[in-house]
Amino acid sequence: MNFQLIRCDMDHPGDVSALKELLEKEEVKAESIKAIIAQTEGDGYARGYSTLAFQVLLSEYLDMNHQEVFDTIPMMMIGKTGGLMTPHYTLFIKEESSEGMPFNEKRFAFGVSSTPVLEKEQIGTLAQVDLVAEAVAKAMEEAGIESLDDVKCVEVKCPWGEGGALAKASSALGVAVALKEVNREEVHEGSINNDHSLYSTKASVSAGQEQVAARVIVMGNSKKSSSNLYIGAGVMEDALDLQGLKSAFLDAGIEEEAFLTEDQQQQIVNVFVNAGADAIGKVRGRRHTMHTDALSMHSGILAKAVANAVVGSYVGETRILCSAGSEHQGPQGSNLIAPVVRIGGIR
Image (cartoon, rainbow, N blue to C red; front, side, top):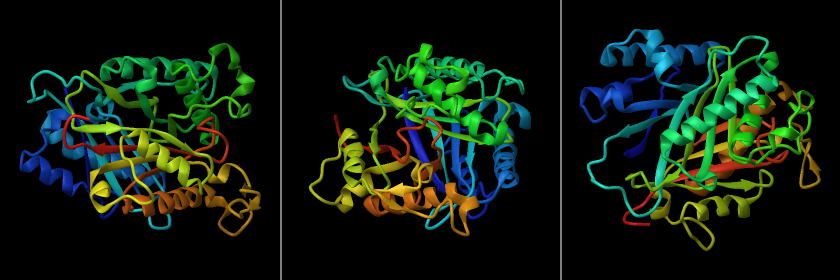
């Protein structure tokens, strides 16, 4: 299979004109779109508006009603932007390869899965941990990713639940359990959003009122893929950790001495970032005011804006996906980085 990512701009939360043009010109087939992640501005209502815009457009091409489109294609709308963040969306494309047999080496692949509809009493509990772990395993299998080491990023969008925190925490722990970063026996009800020694370095979780189940996208590398893309992963210990940022790109096969060249920047298809600067009150021993100044109610947006600026200055691009969450998503205060790059020949 050939796996691709296509990044499109958004002029407003309901702007799907770029996708419409791709479909009209038959540059993309609607049935090859397996998931969509968007960095949208606005609140939950704006996210719902974005989701509906995709549902309406794709239903015309897929001969499905709006609900069937929603149920079939995970649509993860990451709302609220700040700083230099540019609203955009990424199409996850999977289609039969025109290259014949897969390469002898691992290339970018993804798989999607969903939990059953989560009952209210399941959200933020061990039941959600286990259901998400099962969904991650299914998505890995669909992607053809055989080794846990080859999983580089797991994006999850789950129902909101109690302020979103417990729902996100349960989802992240589910990823950690599935990837064997955490032993399931160590996870108890009291661990959820409490024991932060338990975490995944591959999970990026967002919650929204528009979701009724946890939707999962697992990204990694597989020998069964004929894609010309490759994905790496790394951890920035804090928002200023450029060495950790560079290690993520090195894991993706991009080596550099100090800065990326213009050609190297052109290779980058997208970067998936989970920002955690707001998880703790200090950076390198110096306090910050994300939780104490006038914008404290928007600390997650501030953390995303900082990550977008730091990573964006490195890659020369503001259209990178930034989510914010400290609930078992890496060590407290860290950024999780997963760059997807396009490679010219056999890697």
